[in-house]
Image (tube, rainbow, N blue to C red):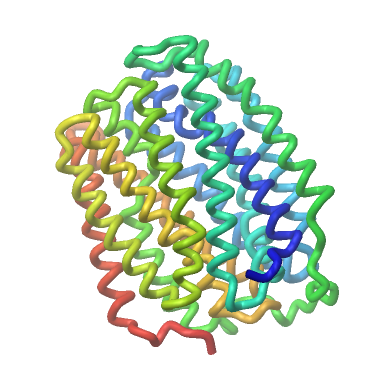
Length: 401
């Protein structure tokens, strides 16, 4: 195997440390909101939807800006820095509005950094190894999530082992523990990453627009949006696990299992997409997703949810890095930041109605009581099936021009 470039390792380590920090908190937020602040699932869906929509709109702009400036690293550093500085304020959160404010600011940071970071990765590697590199990056990102969850689980075990409800004191300790890795991630990216030489001569004519959109990229983007409408926030899976009987500590164990599977399989799955094609690997991942969501809907016990969530890691491994590599395949380098901005932005915008629909299907609103905890998962499985059929019927038509 040829040497992996410096930028790939620096960005992967940055994502690793960021996820150590973030995953301590993100997966506990739905429990904090419901157990400590006493809000319903519709509010959880609203917070996640607003947060992701914010990130999505900024991803579109920041990706295009990185093409215009010819600078990927600078925007990535700003984005990671903003997220790292916002999370400590969760320590003082005493209302869902304050949680929303912190999540909003954190997602602003994510929106600024994501497209330039992915473009920096794509710029740093030859086309025939894109799947491998994006798979490696996702593996590093998810390994950080595993470590962050392990630290959070240890804190929960030491402070409230066996408790079915998350306490405010435990959550505050986790917030404090998340600060150092988040700040360290920003420092490593700022000092270690290098701008790619090919971006030294910016050209506004190279920006991606509705006029210059590659029709194959547009077709791919449309199918991904269709899939995402059924892919609500994973917060609902966490709430499903608790509703089926898992304690807070057991939920953390479930999340650790998921991240272990995701970490171990991401790099091989990315490399597989280099060999057999992106579309085939994506179709396999969406098939796994549909089966997993059907199983979540049918699960009778917390332990069944735990086991199903392990297979959910396979879906992530097959799709996350592969989809990012496919974006780079479909557009020229000079438009790559804009393309990643549109890709992540469209997904995030679709995530808002996806999470809101899931919350309403579960809990309902006003006099409408909803259909219960299984409903969002049936809906997600149906949308995955529809998107998979559309991607399959496109055949090999989705290809670089």
